[in-house]
Length: 493
Image (cartoon, rainbow, N blue to C red):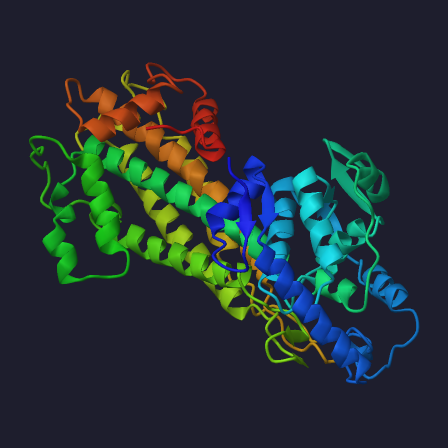
């Protein structure tokens, strides 16, 4: 795998996923180093002129009016120490790596005034696999300041790090990787932490996962349409041209491709339940939400969002509110609602498949009948999962209080909006697993049924993981096997 070259632009969610999860190496274009050096000189000149610069010669937050002089490096380390208030479970390694890449990408855009040596140290730590132990609780979305403090401390050799699968003092991890702790110049400490890199990095991974889950949901939806004998005229492109809602044509085209065969099967119904008939609309709205989340994330990944911002080309240092991620938080709140809507439709289709037999299928999808439970107990499980998704779909971006003596009287709760959306994707994939399993069982019960080539491959992928139900058995185990394949990226159909 070739290295990802940081240029200050064009970083995409796929790049973040490759670095965070696949160990892709990162390199830096020479133009980035030139940009950083130019910004650093502007910052140093502004400081030498006596200009008040937030976080360089002033305190932070409510201490804005306090002048700072003396040992600049000591003050920057004090800044990191004093804001290391995060608690809770440590963030997973892929999110930490995504955070490190996100901050490096933001630095590459210019505007931070970060010292080139500190920037290079960040890249070297990422490539060497030295990762800060980052607690998960502490950010309210006005940059991920408190969470990022552990990241900054690691580069100075303080705190803890994970290296080669072991948790250890950061200084030891750096030494084992043959890296040296950094010395902080004026504003370096603030530059390391004054960013929404946890939100942007974690958001990039969530978007990548949502795209994978969307493709899997299309597979499940198409297999259900085959199993239930759905009226496929709902996918006619003329219908979607008549109401070209965002994403609807694309979703319909994807389903049509999965169901394409030499001779279209005759529909068994005039109109199917809405969870089937409206699938292109439901999936299209989700596609739109994923696209909006991608756009919001990629803006952050490629942006100079520091406060204060160093304008290298204009020889100026200005205060800014660019760290405030209201649009990013809103995008993930919206994505969460779109996932919940899609998950509700998947649950409805599962109940249609496993119900009383109104679709010409054996009751509860049981081939033995009588007192057999078949698939019907799983209706409780999918309903419980859907309830968990709906609970997480409730918005959080308005849940904040004024802090820091009222200086910080607005927040976005972006990290929470992103993390709960990521949790919803995990739950949603569990529902997709149940729908795939039920649709495959229904198809097996329709003896002699001929599937489209693509849906036949989907059915075969299910059967490679679980056997048909011939008598009652613990089906939760089967659902877990399918979910594991979906979540791990091993699903092939």
